[in-house]
Amino acid sequence: MQFQSISIEGLSHRFLSRTRPPTTALTDVTCTFPAGKVTAIVGPSGCGKSTLLLIMRGLMKASQGEIRFLYGDGAGRVTAGAPPRMSTVWQSFNLLPWRTVADNVSFGLELQGMAKAERLDKAMEAIRLVELSGFENHYPGQLSGGMKQRVGLARGMVMAPDVLFLDEPFGALDAQTRLYLQEQLSTLVEKSAKTVVLITHSIEEAIFLADHVIVMTARPGRIAASLEVDLPRPRGVDIQHDKRFGELFSEIYGLLRDEVRKSMLN
Ligand SMILES: Nc1ncnc2c1ncn2[C@@H]1O[C@H](COP(=O)(O)OP(=O)(O)OP(=O)(O)O)[C@@H](O)[C@H]1O
Ligand SMILES: [Mg+2]
Image (cartoon, rainbow, N blue to C red; front, side, top):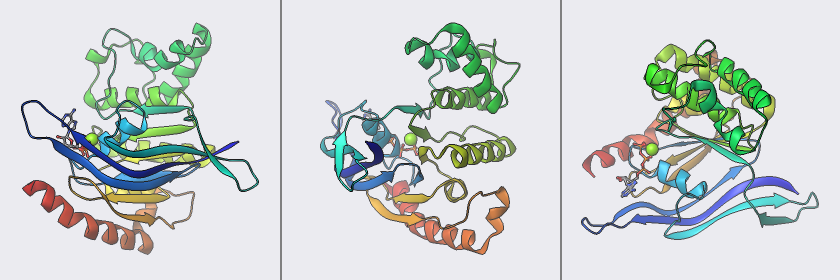
């Protein structure tokens, strides 16, 4: 059976509180994340993107709706099955302060029971990919915000998952490092045909990296639109000067503008 997509149907979520009125974070979200493709999610702050991610990762139960992992049998039949191997780079890094960079990056492999030499090898490769070689033995407290974020990124990639979830993976980076790592990620996904779900505030980043862009409304988050990024691959950063890039940018920004204003009045 071949993993085909993550399918979300009619998903709504309400956070209940004893002391405050409930917060409706998501309403009736229906969308698909196709296997082997990069899908970006953009939407105003607080519209429920990270909540959606927590629910997809099975760390929170939605108040309503369904998530299914769909598999094809090659003969046109599709059935729902167990989640594929997934890993997540969280918005807040979530590094373990008492472990070195190398031990943070290899933590997931250690939990899988991989032998020490092998997991350190893999960790070093991931650390090299995010340009942190030389910092393997530093502790998170000795790193800058951008460096911590890169450790988080390495920790997600080292797992070689079927599906990689990235929640604002470049948010804490300076503009040049961000551009550089976007390029690295672009090459990586083009080579490995991974399924990636990328949450980002940057419309440019979404267009540069993704095959599809899902635009969400202000809270309570709904899907405002789903656009295909019909730009050729491989893509270099120069693609930003492409006419089609500009058209997609205007279209997405047009959709987001009003939503961002609404979210500020929320
Ligand atoms: N544990 C929680 N309890 C109560 N409300 C919550 C909780 N987590 C999130 N919320 C609320 O749900 C809404 C969506 O939050 P979420 O973190 O999913 O937004 P987001 O789209 O990821 O925002 P950002 O772009 O700023 O990261 C917000 O209004 C937030 O206050
Ligand atoms: Mg978030």
